Each structure stands twice: as C-alpha cells, then as structure tokens.
Length: 126
Image 1 (cartoon, rainbow, N blue to C red):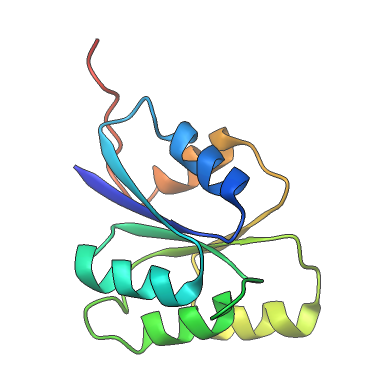
Image 2: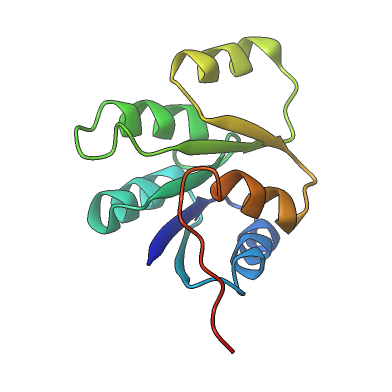
C-alpha cells in the first residue's frame, strides 16, 4: 500500500489531496507545517511527498533541504505545491532535486497523474 504525505498549512489543500486519492488503496498522511511533515516522514517513510513552499514554522525549502540530507528520505520523490512564481526561490527548489511542481490552484486528477508515475496506485475494489 502506497504512503502519500502532504505537507501544507492549508486545511483545504490537505483535504483536496486526501480526496484525490480516496478511490485508491493507499494511506494519505498530512501535516500542517514542515517540522510536523519532517517528523511524520521520518516515522512513516512515505513513497511520495506533496510539499507546499510557503508555510509557518518551517517552510517548504527548509523542509526539502532536510529531506534531501536525510539518508532514509533523500530518494523520496517530492512534488512542490506552490502559488509562487518567484524565479529565485524556484531555482533553489530545482537544485534540491524536486520531482516537479504543481501550481495552485490545482485539481486532484493532477496529483494522481503525477503520483502514478512514481508510486503504484491501485483502485480500491468495490
């Protein structure tokens, strides 16, 4: 069973991610900020992480840096969720080897499409 972690300070975004994968046999974990997300990632070892850039406590760039420097998490695919268009910040993200970006607002289908490239997603049986 695939483990999907979403780290975003927006409750609505966390709900959209959870809903997007509702039809699939997977576990969706969520965190409100980078510090909480990092703690969950270290404990649960997700197969993919959807990570917001702008958050309180620990932002997405700092969180991504810590993920990439953690031996157990360094290879986990990370998809950045962002409303940002700041080229300098996005350039930093590229250097930290992010799998891709999804611009906000987004549709759940986009998340499933991206995740299915790196994680085996199986539909729940009726």
